[in-house]
Image 1 (cartoon, rainbow, N blue to C red):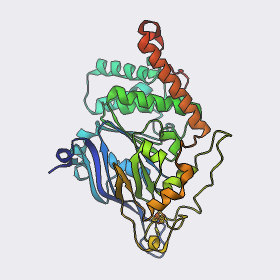
Image 2 (image 1 turned 60 degrees about the vertical axis):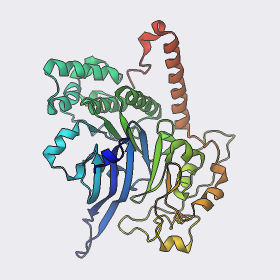
Image 3 (image 1 turned 180 degrees about the vertical axis):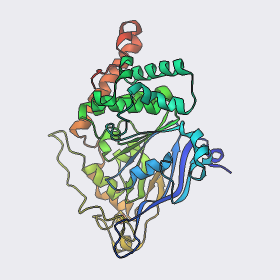
Image 4 (image 1 turned 30 degrees about the horizontal axis):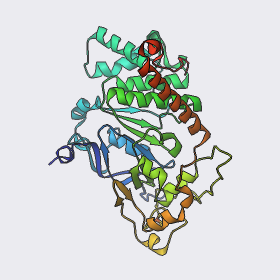
Length: 381
Ligand code: SF4
């Protein structure tokens, strides 16, 4: 029986997925292996925005690539609409590519500098045989307009645009084939703070308009707070906590999630700065610690933690956590059980988010007066 039939609300799922990489710098012929993603099982609900959060090197970008088969897993299955895409041939996968699209972190290197913007956005349409030439051109113009760029820009080259504009072009290209799932691998982390908010708001709008399922990879809990439905927290290749966004921010249970929460800079002088909970660097994925992988940095670690690996277990409605002492952890962090602090960047994004909501409300109540400012975003973003 397929996953699709078992859970029609789940559009994409990983089952015990592992991705190992050989270490090319191994000395004396000793073969070493990096366990970039290690036994991840995760179901992504149709139409949701799922954020995957963790420090650099935690495996989140590798997981993102496994989800759209930019990488094949070493073991385990990746089920999309009932089919294990990890087991499909390249030609079988080609038909599904239009459903699963990727927005890359770096808008500077992800666009071919020799192609015009029009050709870049049209390429997925051509590859999938969608429309004739005139229809494709019309679609390119519509997409450019929808992401806040003039259709006249179709003849220009990527180097003629700012970072924010290039990311908009990347988003238009990802949307061209009419995907069902879009994965953004830190889509705003290379952009200026004010542009980040505009691109995040754009992604949110497009998600509603195109009925997308969105998976956002981020290293910053503040970035994804206002646009994700659920958050998966990763540490050293494993998911350590999965929760509805509101539940996670109101009461983080895993000591690592709590540390990420404490790492959000405080914007208000009225909110006392919290003590950072993380000590030391992330251990090498070549030799992850035994037992709980977080035990070398965890303030609550016991001898049990060093000996036995905690399972990712249900601890409430839709909530999973991998920690032997999650109850004690929740009690030990009372300062996090409140409206969490927002960074200055998040404050600006939140202000823009509110502004846009108010603008939409005005448009709803006075459609004739507001029709010319639907986008509400500057062309030079
Ligand atoms: Fe910390 Fe132990 Fe929980 Fe791991 S299992 S997060 S070391 S308390």
